[in-house]
Image (cartoon, rainbow, N blue to C red):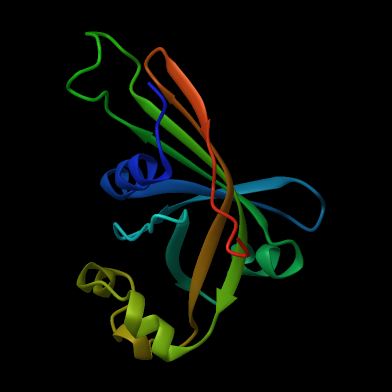
Length: 151
């Protein structure tokens, strides 16, 4: 059964943590776990907070192409022993340094990592706009069309 962008967004919200992969200066790939704080919209956008002085932010500043990989438990309607749900997003990252945007995407759980909230020195918001989403759900596999914002 094919999934829609809405279906995939709901799964991504429920999974929360993913691996964000960027390309380093030497061409190698670097990944790190990130929480989307259950904020994924139906156009395929995901939002992550980080510190501005990280290698990941440096990598994204040089090459905005990133990958997000999510892995979740099998849905209740899937066959026993099914491998679960896997989602891979190819996207374009944008670095946002606007406190107004920080506040719009802030979640109380973030105080664990950023004790001063949106006023945390060096805070940055990373928006990943999906370009292509591929999923595997048990025996079901597919690619979801991501709406082009220009359409």
